[in-house]
Length: 266
Image (cartoon, rainbow, N blue to C red):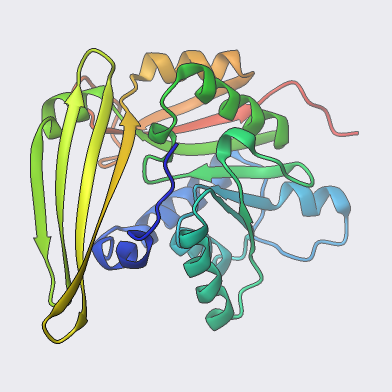
C-alpha cells in the first residue's frame, strides 16, 4: 500500500476542485440520519465522548478532517503518509483546531477507544489491493465502532477503471507546477497502476521533477458488501457518490454506509 511522498506537497493544488464542503455536508446528513455521533466536543460523560468521536481514515492533508471539525465534531485523522500528515498538522497549527493526527496504515488501525463514526473518502479503500487485507480493514473498523456506530466510505468501481479510465494519459499545467498521469488497468487482476510525474517550479526557469507510482484495485458492490458482512458490518445504504442516485451498472464511484452490530453499551 503506497504512501504519498513528494506528491503530497502539490496534492492540495491539484485537488482544489474537489468538492470537500459538499462531501462534508453529505457526511453530516448521513451521520444525523443513521449514526450516533453528535457535533459536540468536550462531553463530560466518557461514553458520550467516545460515540461523538469521528475518525477520518486516509485523511491525507486533512481538508475534510478540518471541515468536519468546523461542523463541531471531535476529529481524529489517520493516514500512512508522513508527508501528507505533515501538511495536515501545519494546517492544524495555523487554524488552532484540536485534531489528533495518527500515522498509521489502515490495515493496522489502532485507536485508544471506540468511536461513533469512521469516514474514508477519495477512494482510499481502493489502495488496499487484496480482499483479505480489505476484510481486515473492515474488521478493524467494526472493532473500534461504538455500538450502533457507522462507517461511511467511497470506492471506485471496476467499471470506472475498466471503461472510463483504462489505459490513458492525463496532463494538467498550472503556473508553477504541472503533472502527467499515465494510467494502466489490468482487467484480469483488476489492478489499476498510475505513474504520476510532477514538475514544480523552484526558481524562475528551474523546475524540479519527481515521479511516483501508485496502485489501486477496482471493486464491485457485491465484493464490498460481502466483505462488510464477513467483517460483521451491516450495509445500510449504497448510492452513486457523484449523483446520490441508486447504484447502477455504470456507476463509477459508490458511497457506502455500513453499521456496527452486535456490541452493547456496558
